[in-house]
Length: 192
Ligand code: SF4
Image 1: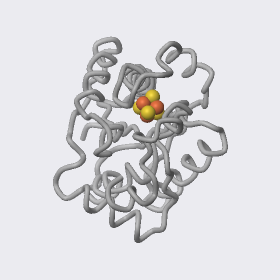
Image 2: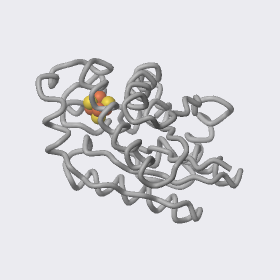
Image 3: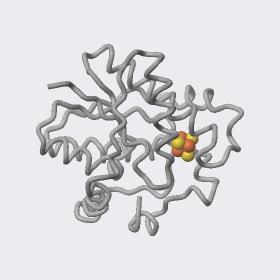
Image 4: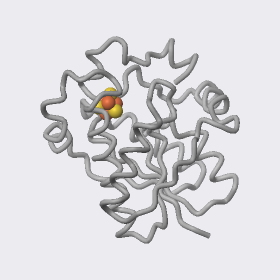
């Protein structure tokens, strides 16, 4: 069975996919590499919540370095880009490429991600960034649409049922500033 590395941004976005893959007894691990999340306290909250969800299901959880300075350097000049603009493309590419490098060094056959599961994200944009990283690293990217097959509803349900920590902004300092990009708890309860 091929070994999959699932890139996660947070527990609310990844929970239904993790639950599904665990139920199917798939050979997979969850990777958390999110230097876009700032400040550090917020990063730690999301990391711990994601780790807890995985531990409860005996799913391996890999947490890579937290290097926000590297991320800030990469998106320099794109600070004022709108949501779904160039800053987000750079952000997706940086995180997915790092994940693919890890996958290559650690015997994974493919990488997939939940970075586009929120309906406030552009899945095609995530896939484009992933394909670019895939060409650069030689690691296969699995473009499964994790919104489908009832996973969206299951995600909403799991967030409510487990009372998991659900943030009120995407993660980076620039998304906090842009009201249109805030997926607050009231909106979150409707659709994360
Ligand atoms: S809004 Fe989200 S995808 Fe866009 S740069 Fe910020 S953290 Fe990255």
